[in-house]
Amino acid sequence: MTGFGIWGLHNTLVAMPARYDALEQRGVATTATFEGCFGRRNCDVSLTFRGMPRRWRYPVNSSQFGDLPKGARVAMILDPRDPETAYTAEDVEQRTNDGFGQLLVAAAACGLLGPVGFAVWHAIARSSTSSVDMS
Image (cartoon, rainbow, N blue to C red; front, side):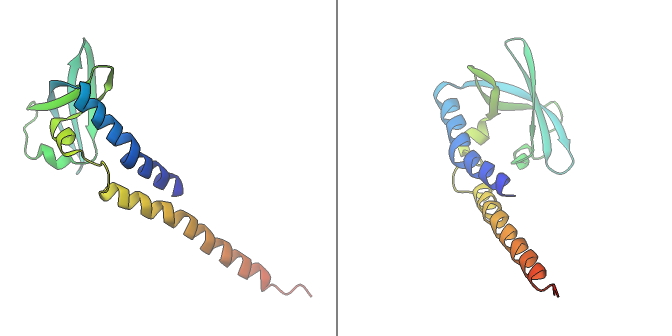
């Protein structure tokens, strides 16, 4: 749990801001095709850039796809230096999961719950072994 917390903190405070900064500085506007949503939250978009087909699955902020029909056009911003980095124009504009939002709160909670859980487990383990009568 602590590992997820550390990843989440790094992602929301360091990695996502850097990705959005790169997209804002050198990103190329392009259009993807909405492939549909699978389950409650996973929505896919695809596009071809420099002859290479790409597909992205959106597990967060999938509400932006609303009632789009399959095959609808979706505005995207793609980093030409790293074509694996592409987000919807809406995500870039709103800087989704960047900074002090829900992901940061969840990551901080996991980061704290991991050590707290270990401490509780350790205290229980110690108390159960110290109460054993060795006579």
